Structures are given as C-alpha cells and as structure tokens.
Length: 438
View 1 (cartoon, rainbow, N blue to C red):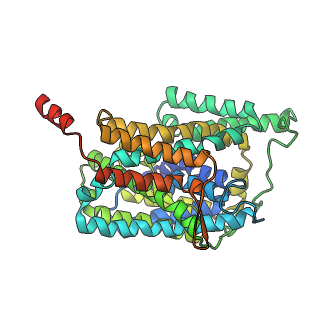
View 2: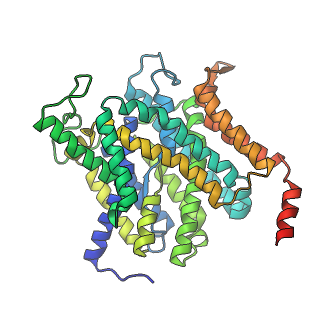
View 3: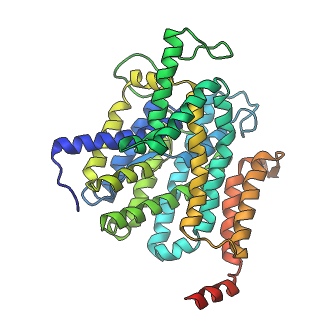
C-alpha cells in the first residue's frame, strides 16, 4: 500500500532521504580528496538525471550517491607511494583529475552494457556476471580499503575508538531513524567530543596538530563549487573500469529489491536499459565536473522499505536538496573540519561492511562452495586481487606503455573470474544430488 503524501510531507520525506545518503556520500570526497561541494552537486544532479531518463513519474525510488567501489580506484590512482603517478612530482589535484577522467570513461560502460542487456536480455547477461564473480569483487573492494582506515585512525586513536563505539551502538541498539543512519550519528557524536577537546579542554592530537581546522573551503554561505576538468590516461581508465561491474551488479540488485517490496516490476518498466543508462549518464557527468561515480544507494532503498513510500518525487526532492548544499562553501568547511581520526573510525565499519556485503551475497544467493568450480573462481579472484595489490610491484611493458599490474589487481581478478565462469564445467554430481533431494 502506498501513502498519499501532501507537499509538506513529501518535502520532509525528501529530507529523510537526504540524511540517509549523507553520511556515506560525504565520506567519499573526505577520504579521496574530491570536493565536498562538487560531490553533493554531482549526486544531486545525477539523481535528477536518473529520474528524467527513467521517466519522472515511473522511475524507481532511488537516490544516486557517491560510489564506494570507485573510491578504491581513486585511492589506487592517487597513491603517493605506489600509484601510477608516484614520483612524478604531481599535485594531488592533478592526480585526482586523472581519476575523474577514469570515472567518466567507466560511465560509458553502463551504456554499453545497457545495449548488451537490450540485445540478449537480463537473464542471459547475468549468466556472464553471476554472484560467484561479483561477490568476490565486492569483498576485494572492502579488504583493499582496510589499510586506509588504519592510517587515518592513527592520528588520534581515542577519537577513532569513540566513533567506532557510537556507530556500533546505534547499529545494534538504535531505534527508528537512528538505526538507519548510524554512521552519520556516530560521526556527529564523535565530532561533539572533538569540539569539547578542542575548545573546552584545549587539547591537540598526539602529534601536536590541532584537532579541528575550519579554514579549508571558506566561510561564504553561497558560492560556486570548485569544478575540475578531467584528464585521461590509459592506466587510470583500466584501473577504474572493473569497478563499474560491481556497481552495475549493485544497481540490478536494488532494482530487484524495489520491485519485490513495491509490487511494481522496475526491471521491465521502466526497464534496466533505461535505469542503467540513467546511472551511466550520471556517472559520466559526475566525473566530467570533478566529482565521484554515482550508484544506487542501498541506504535509501532501506528507507523506502521501511516507509513503503515509493513516490519518485520524494527522491527527486532529495536530489534538489543535495544540489543546494553543493553551492555552500561554509557547509563544505564544516564537513572538512571533521578530524581524520573520526573518518578513520567510521571507515573501520564501512570498509568491513563492504567486504561483509560480498560474503552476504554469496550466502543469500546460495552459492554452493562445495562446487569446485565456484570454489576455484572465488579463490583465484581473491588471490589475484590481494596478491597483486599487496605483493611486490609487477610491471609489464607494452610498447611504450608500462602497465603496473599491482594497480590493476581488481580488473585482472574480474576478467579472470568471468573467463573461469565461462570455461569451467558445472559439477554434475552436485546437480544430480540436488535433483535427487527434490
């Protein structure tokens, strides 16, 4: 049953969706160096674009927030020690420009795969991108981010632990909205502790630096976001492309969930072709203005599941709110003032949850690990991804281009996983056992 909303209630519901996506969305620019203002503008515009392409009145009720999957690619590209531009004397902004260029190109993969789905159908397409391939990809994304959480927390362990404790508390014992946005509340609670430490007790970080810094973005209430032109480089593009496969799988999963809980078949109307195109165009535009890739947000799907309000106009209002916040340097300064240790503490939970989602997908989809084919695919993908990332650097020269394989671990793992899934035979003995049980 859908509730009929007045304009006032619709506006409040839009704010609730803004809060639901907010904590995770702003973490991406904070963790990667992208602009908070540009990110908010990108996700707001992306959400509106998605709804326009899908059909404003029949679009699925989703919000396109900033993608954590692509954040791994950004960190890999901008890494000062082992990134493809390490040792070249580049500024962080210049490396970020190449990362956003990779994001922009990855957005076109959505459009290509939408055409493939239109030609072969969803079921045939998913045979080549099953859970046994996508779930290890998600696990790799979470695990590869783990060192960054440790590094950010190291500056002030006390604040990191406070953040972790609050997030766990709200996640386990919270009620209502507090259970939906535990990360945002955990960051807010730890930030209050940081305010007290900074202003009331005059404390500093163990290294002597100030706990809070309010001077990064400016004090103007209204101002243009600092847009950034993307740059293009083969290595950066190759690093980014495989992460689109993870977010595309997430996109399809969210459409399936929304179809189940709403009673509407979003897979066929407006259809995956249109929704994937909307997501892809949003990602292209996000990268084009110096922002992150976008993806359908499970946080907002969770709100829809609880409220049973499927009106797409509610999500469109949330997109408008995000756009408005994107034009406030003062608001961005407040976000930037959040101590790294607090973000590190939140990352402990977030990155672990990303890996856990991959494991949960294997369980929910009942992937049979007694099947040697499945076991081999998962094992090989995990070893390739983690081994290349954390092992000794490996570079292959192709003409005048040097391909750093350690930066392409996820890409290689996904390609190998898809190939193994195609060429390895099914375990017929297990299939026979399953048939006998029926």
